[in-house]
Amino acid sequence: MAGIDEAGRGSLFGPVFAAAVILPEDHRIRGLRDSKLVPLEEREELEHSIRQRAICWSVSAADVFEIDRYNIYHASRLAMKRAVQNLLPAANFLLVDAMKIDLPIPQRALIHGDAKCQAIAAASILAKMHRDRCLEAWDRVFPEYGLRSHKGYSTPEHRRALRMYGPTTLHRFTFDPVRSSSPPEMLPPGAAEQILLFPAEAEEAACL
Image (cartoon, rainbow, N blue to C red):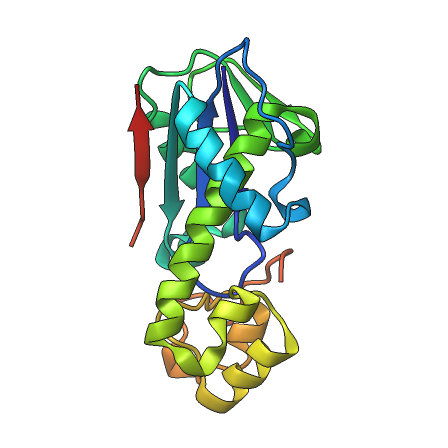
């Protein structure tokens, strides 16, 4: 049984990441919960414990071009699908945080799953930690946007940088704050008309 969760769905910048984790049935990890509720130092310790104790785990992504083409909901499902497909041994049942994945595997979508299921919480931790490290690396490439501090989300600092410098090629052009700061010639086809309900693939995996 694998737990699956995503990170970065509401961000204006970069891929959406997803992780899948299979934990041993007889081994619980103390303190494991939704990554958004865990301080950084504790997240790092939990990440280490998950990687060491999991039967297998995987982190995958859907890039900004896929987000702009398919929309963020379907891109998140695509990232989750890739994470599950990279698990070895393969999962035979999926517990997903509030979504269904396009795979022929029995599954259950759990609302607030990262608060109810250790495997989903573990996936939440791995996806967020991997994404945060990528944003810190991109901050060195695009220092004027402040990605290290806000991790690509729609903060006043980020929106101000978009107005001053315009978007990078790794911004999500179909998201309104990015779209509204972009000259028409920069927008991908259909982006000017697309309305979202929510303001190069990277993968990592380990198996036993």
